[in-house]
Figure (cartoon, rainbow, N blue to C red):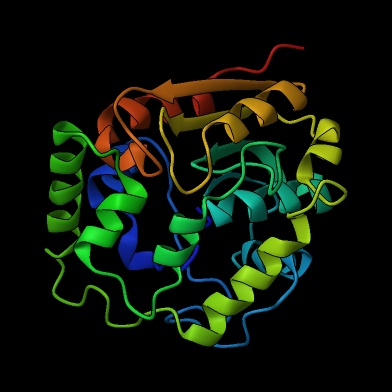
Length: 249
């Protein structure tokens, strides 16, 4: 699993991880220069993908299934394009192509996401829909994260998250959008999002699904960027079905 902008291992919801881990071997990690990991966070998207590939190979894996969330979804696509032999199936959640005409990051979302420190209210705005049910689910998600005694022992440094911003800009124009390249991805791909993502507009998920040849798209109701933490069992079941499905020749 490749994480989001400013995300660490501590921010994967245990309800989501545990559900998938009941049927699959799940690996989470902090990429180079992020939180608990040493090294330097790179300023180029290609280097984030290269570092992920090095991590996979250091563990002794020749091929893996990859789930990328938000910024991690961009890295996962770049990894699949760079090293297609390493990726069996790809899951892209709450993410997009970097640039899609008419469906790009909102100024308010960027402003909130790049505050020196985020409050719970900031997180609920960015990751959950502004409805009672979604906001309540967001608060339950935050409460689950805090059950671990050592939760958030290490945060993403300003230097590292600014490197993430720089890397994201590599796919942030019409000429550099991942839409120009992802048509060559031949792996089975599952794309999913909430129906109102204020971080990466949901239409970017549609654009990816239209461009990647072997992709399917799921949109969850009354939810936003972190829909999978609002629907951990429902989406966990979809992930397990997708990964367990036999590919047709």
